[in-house]
Image (cartoon, rainbow, N blue to C red; front, side):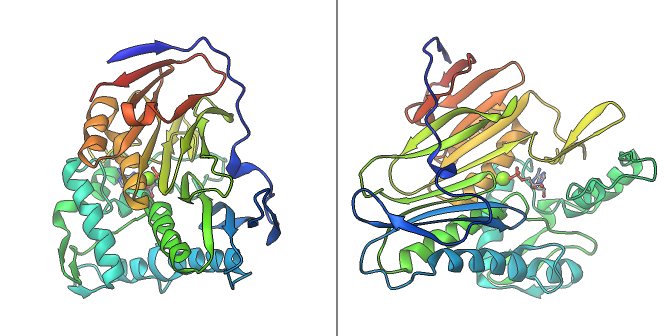
Amino acid sequence: MKSKYWLIYIWFLPVLLLTGCGVGQQGIFGMDESGDQVYRDADVAMGTVVQQTIYVDNTCDNDKITDDIFVKIDQLEGELLSRRLEGSEIATINQNSGIKQEISLELAKILEECLQVSKASEGAFDVSLGKLILLWDIDSWTRDSDGEFVVPSQQQIEAALADSGYEYLELEDDTFYMPEGHTLDLGAVGKGLALDALGDMLQEQKGVTAATISLGGSVLTYGSKPDGSPWCVGIVNPFDTQEQLGYLELSGDWCVSTSGDYERFVEAEGRRYHHIMDPATGYPVENDVKSVTILSKSGLLSDALSTACYVLGVEKGMELAKYFSAEALFVTTDEEISMTEGMYSRFFPGNHMMDINVAEE
Ligand code: AMP
Ligand code: MG
């Protein structure tokens, strides 16, 4: 590892994804300096803020493209991914655990990729942790009558872990089986795989020249901006989420996903518990990682790897990212940033003074 200390003060450029539109605005339409038309829109979907900027030329015949994007996200959540929404494929599979089930080819492909990440990460990433995730109640961190979050008991954690394990999932073409009581949770890949589906949609829509869509901690860049300037994707500083750690300059099609302990957490018994689980202990991961950002051509991989690398920590996480030809950036509790060379070549730091380590190839 070689180390760089940044003394240069760099003004942080406003992040493209956060400019030009506010939450709840619908279908803002205008002209880019180059003459291309641009739609900007923001709303809440999949339980998070979604922001879109879509550039179209005059062959585009769809002035409702941003609405179509929201419809697609809602459809993915309602019909495929949601654990809670009755009728989604995942909810149905969970109800039918213990039985061999026929699943959609779309889900079979997703599960196959998830299993590859589970195997390569030796189980650090595991979509069968549904019971444990339900036990920790990370969607709502429900409090008791005294307003306290009650930490699950060791016994409850062990019972939930006993009903999990990617190695028990059986997938053959479109036939899926998991033992009775095991529960799938695709929370770690949902946003990333949605970006893949949205990228396909943009590809199929005539006249879309470029776009960027941000879905919570995951961002898609598509095509090249009409003025030829690169996409700028901001990365949150996990020590102060109002600030940017820096930004990535990207050209063309990419997905960037970040997992961090600041995203969802609760304070209880004088400690902080967050939403990324260590399958080895059944507790939220306790290591020196604050956040992980992954850059990949695949949304699913970027999202799965951000979670997996968070669990694995810097050293093993770097290896995992490289195995999948992805770029990684870790922020650790000692206020250091460690990243792969491919990430470093695209990274512009914000106005913090953290040490930067670049992993040699
Ligand atoms: P992310 O924010 O992308 O890291 O995803 C975190 C979400 O993935 C959590 O809210 C859980 O639903 C789920 N999750 C937590 N820990 C794991 C894990 N070790 N493997 C797979 N999914 C997990
Ligand atoms: Mg993830």
